[in-house]
Image (tube, rainbow over all chains, first blue to last red; front, side):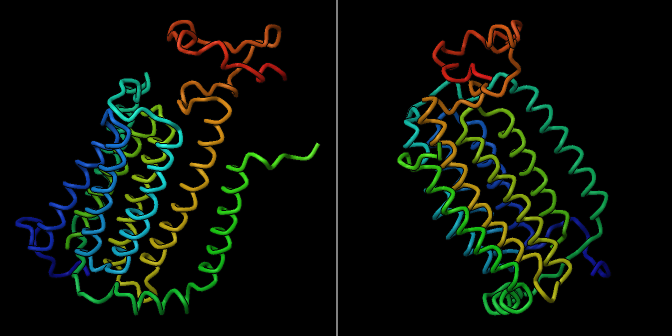
Length: 179
Length: 132
């Protein structure tokens, strides 16, 4: 896997596409955490998740990319928009979205980024993964889910049911506790 | 594909999520930052699955599981946020100080006078929290 790896520069075609998508994802993620309008944060989140789905496609993980589009862009962002509307958040520009410890947060984030980037670049400098398409298609992924990983899959369905019931119980007002 | 590229992108995305988690006050924006961090982990999982050529596709299957768990987490998180909004009329995480350290004699939360947090807290905010 690490043998006959081409040099890090110049990047090949898929790597250029991946880097462009990564830049789009990073910039939109930065806008999610810095924008002053709540609804715009949710919409930048859509762009970020879309760019990440494109990155999964470049990495030959097709099925994960489509699941990302369906669940993240289709369901989770819609759920977050519902939450924004139900909490009667200000639609326009609002000045108090950032807390007072913003600079401490920025320092922690920069430190995290420095540590992580240093570690992964020293650890994986020579690692090279040749891409061959079809590895992440629905057929091999589905057969491995329903053969090898079927027990965690079933446990996950029970977890999803429990989360569903929990969300209903939490959000209904006419259910009272005992006493 | 060099493994460095996806791994570095995912590390930066994770740090952006850390910044949002610590710096935002609105609880829904905090949930969005958690989603960013989970997506960074997903990118890592997919990249390492492709690199290691796992025959069982453990990385991509775990990515699907993480996506499902993220959906469950957002559903429950929004239910909790809505419950908090119904009782407190705010989802500002700086103002949810019901678990703060209290002076047992007065029942008033000890607030740091230097930061001036007490001025931002409305008087009706401590209703029903004084009992210990």
